[in-house]
Image (cartoon, rainbow, N blue to C red; front, side, top):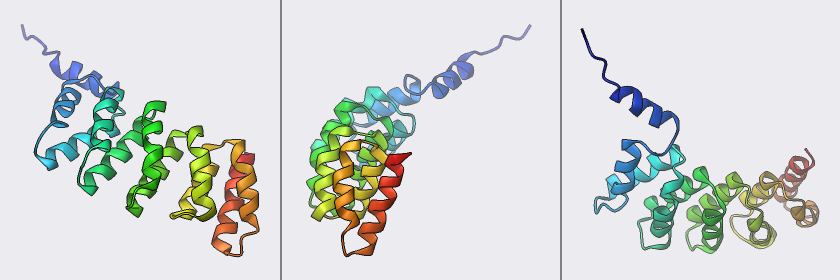
Length: 174
């Protein structure tokens, strides 16, 4: 009589349910690695699997001195996982010196639909850089508090700004 090994079934179940399997545990451990490639792979994996257990460790990486590509991966992972603690830590990243890092934070906050980000995004939409992603994010978040700034931007002489403001207002009206 043959015995069936349940390990593959259990591992598959952990994969389907997100965080909690052996790979997630291994990835959480790899966040502490000195190897930047392993660390980035772990960040990407944990974000793809929306592993909420990883948020505190990811926030440590976000707030530490990390290479640019790792910071971008952390921001994307936090955006995928979501949650208010992550959103609150991403808001200060909107003033990062790196344009790509700021843009990634905008996308992550929009993905999280963070209402706490509306005011800083409104400031970026008025005069900051990257302006157009900030305008887009205001529509994605869906908070009516963004309506006044978006209406103001409809009058902007830059056609890209006014067009994107109109699109975000349409999104808010849905």
